[in-house]
Structure formats: C-alpha cells, structure tokens
Image (cartoon, rainbow, N blue to C red; front, side, top):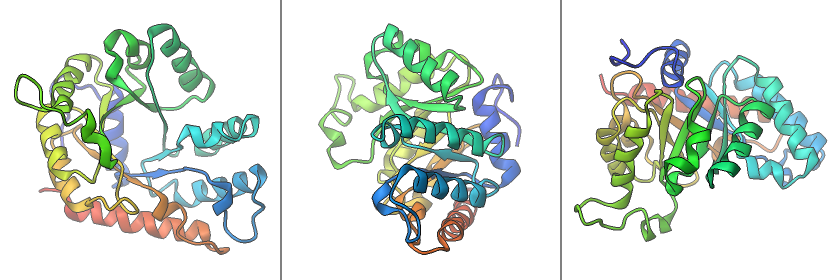
Length: 280
C-alpha cells in the first residue's frame, strides 16, 4: 500500500508503517517493570529486572514492531532505573522501535529538557506527550521528523470524560477539537495519537479526524479493551496504522522459568488477531 501523498517514508509515521508491514506486526509490547512481579527464580531487584527485560526483549524483538517502557516505573528505582532504561535501549538496538511512554508536557524550556533526556540520553524512537499546554509548550517535543510523538488524546481510564469528553460550543467534545488541532501541528508527518482501546467508537471518531496519523491504542487485555473493534475502526491507508499495546496481561504471562516464551506467545496471539481484524 502506498503512503499518502505528502507523507514521506523518511518521516516517523512512514517508518512505523514500513517496519510494521515488513514484520506483519502492529504489536507494541509494554515494558512496565514491577520488581515485585518478577517470575520465580529472579531476584526482586534491579539486577533481576535487567535479566527479565533483556530475555523478554530477545524473545519478542522479531515479533513486535515496538517496545514501550513506561518511564515512571523506572524513575521510581532511581539511578538503577535510569541504567535499566539504557540497558533496554541497547538490547533493542535496531530490531524494533522504542517508545518512551512518559506523557510529558510543560512550558517550552522544560519541554526542551524533556526532549534532550528522551531523544538524546535515552535515544528513543518515539515518545508520548501531553498536548494540553498548547503548541508552544510541546514544540521541542514534536520538531524532529525522524522521531515520533504520540499525543495523549483520549485515555482509557474511567474518569477521562471529566475533561476530555466535555462538550464544546461547537457541539463536539474537547478531545475532538484537540484532534483537529493536532492535525495542524503534524507538519512533519511524525505525530500520532493515543486513544484507549476501551473506547472503540472514539477510535473511529479520531481516525476520521486525524488523517495520516498512526494511533497508539492501550487498554487491551487487563483493562478490557476491544482489540477487534479498535483495529477495524482505526486502520486506514498508509500511514494510518493502529499500534496495539500488549500490556500487563502479556508481560506477566508466566511467573515460572518459561516467562520469556510465555510473553512471546501472547505477542504472537495478538499479532495474529490484529491481522485477522484488519479491514480489507
């Protein structure tokens, strides 16, 4: 399938589509490390966490298009957590994309420091960001065409409608107004949007409003998100893919010595389910 006019394969969105289609995988494996949940036989320590993460990465790198560590889970471990993030970066290498899930957003000076930390120190391929401060606040995070930035648009938590779902004077909800604005910001073809798989109807709305932008869909599995409905609603012409996050139910699929292969099996199941659900 050809890329949309004006969407170069050199942009992040084009790269994501190309690499996902080459692998026939739109699975993003979340790496939300919890030392207390490490399988039997591993120490409940950063060293045990490193062994766990590196084995999971090795087992799944050819079956996923991206890994997504949730950065606060690592920052909570202090210097050891920062080193673990670097270890994950080195382990992934060029075998898959690495997305830092940090939902950063602040005034421009602070965003510049976030961009430096995420893109230069951690060397990630993409980030998640909070767009609610406006374009000037997030400009340092979205100005690199080869680095992706997924805007936290429609979240999967029950209280999201406290703000995101409020009606506007134009008759549509706040998140829809923001979606239109994000399209204006996507001048470099590197932006995507985060929409919870617990809201497949909203995925369809966002897809219509954000042509040419990939969707990152968390919430499948433990949160009860609907994979098939989300995939059918969200896929469009390249590069309008749906990156489905495999979260806790995949990462903690086994507490025994077979943990890495158990995660791989969950990933493969999701990979197949996405392909079956994709519209023709």
